[in-house]
Image 1 (cartoon, rainbow, N blue to C red):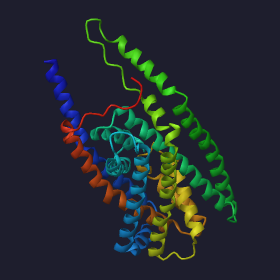
Image 2 (cartoon, helix red, strand yellow):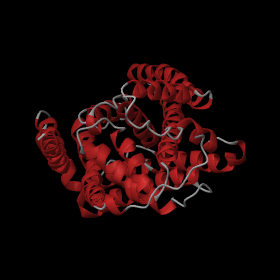
Image 3 (cartoon, one colour):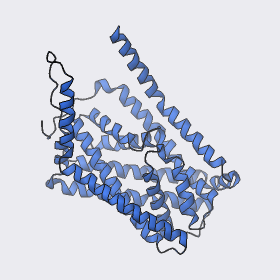
Length: 355
């Protein structure tokens, strides 16, 4: 009876999980509509209507290139470590992005699931988790550098508001730099191994003497040591550079939308500031699913410094959410298909980490 009850609970949980993409999409769209309705709807609609199909296609194409660069950056971290995972990283990078922007999870939920899905290609779970930790470190680190560039350019803009925002951004980035450094240090000094030992010891307390002892877990720390080995510095450097290029390429989304709307009084440096600071504000609110409301508010704030009205800023934000849906929905379908076929996945290849 207990087994049937557990089985029913598992089936119910799986049914809920299958519907999360639709629920997350509806909630996100509902909040976006509410945010637009509380502002000048006519101005937003007019600016949004000027973008046109060509503008939306251009923004989506840029987003595809950005995600591909991020996928290549992830693949470079795993390059040379068995089994080959390059194609999987490209596919799963879209899945990670789709989960983060469409589901009601924090902005790292897709990254956690991405590590799990990578094991479907035969990658050991410890190595998959370690690769995502390193990938997130490079992603956050390059964003901090990108935001620093934006804050430096903003400091040249006249006005008290621009100076205040630049000062706030630089102070925030100083704290973020310490966090990134700590994140890197924790991966290198073996703190993950300590945590794993504690969890293993805790698990053994709940195993009766008559039961079989669980096998020692594969070490995430050992996988991290493998990834950060001195012989792999060129792979890691390439991953870092690819992430930096991805952030820079993201400015093209802003440029395409503003050009379609007809905003011609902002230059390339202004667009870079808008992209860098809006991304930094969105990242600072990573617990908010897809940065809903935060992205819009950040763009209104930063665009206002360059004489761009709130209606145009909100239209820019809505236009940038078009690729979230166009690319995110197929990515969620890929995720669901992978989950449905998980019984036939390859077993993990033994990794180089410690037993």
